[in-house]
Length: 45
View (cartoon, helix red, strand yellow):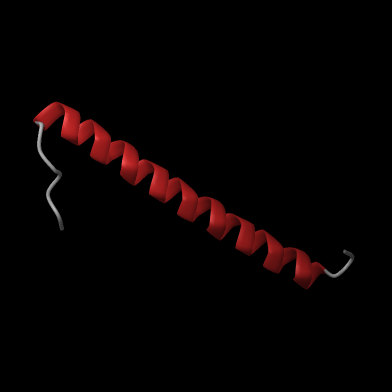
């Protein structure tokens, strides 16, 4: 893996994947907290 472009592309893909996963987990956690506090589904928007 000496090609700098390949490393940059792999890094970008890894960063995007981790970012997407973090976003999904944060959304689920926020939904769970909202549901427990207000005993209703969170607003959509």
